Length: 282
Image 1: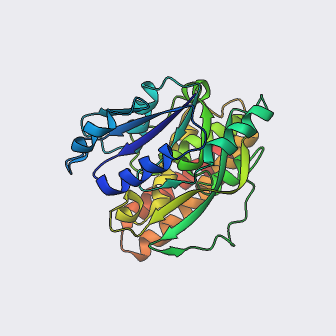
Image 2: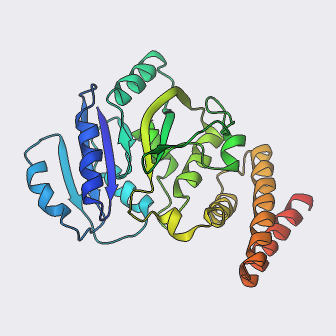
């Protein structure tokens, strides 16, 4: 069974569409967990009819504001051997789970699979022609540069999710980037090279990444957390690659911060880059 987790906060109309895309799956062996981060837009009223479908569980928590914490809560209630995530503003194509579960069945050693997305901004399809990176096998080096695994595309073994420790619950943004770094540092991933997910933006609802604008700063924080942990201590090659990427990101972000007049943020990034540069050469 696949446990599908939809985290949501105040996206009543969009989440209805996301839920419908799960219920339309040709793969039928799933449960759907709606993890509500204390919405106040009437989503609870919809939960009355969701309760009539025994595949759906609506679970409400106190306001967190951290997507990772909400997803982690959903997984803690999961019963399936596999876990899949669907952001409340995204949609699945009907054969999404069918295609991925068939791939996993053909390769019993696989523990994680993701897929291509269709990107929509409003009603316009956004080209992905410039997206050139490795997507299958050992993708750690490419995953360092940016988040190359879409949360809504993933199916992974629930036991593996727990081994990884789940998402960080103290990052508002880039919590997925940080988790995929821990995953890809130790495990290969499989990939379906066709769109199985519609990733939507520009639909009138605020998104955290759009609210802050400068997502790279959060990726720097995620990389710092990764390097300060023991996750890479037995892999000096990957650790060195992560340090180089942190220094690169810090330099770029610091330059932009200075241009924006945010001197304190620029100096913090420059100090972090200098510290990790010293560590690499000590």
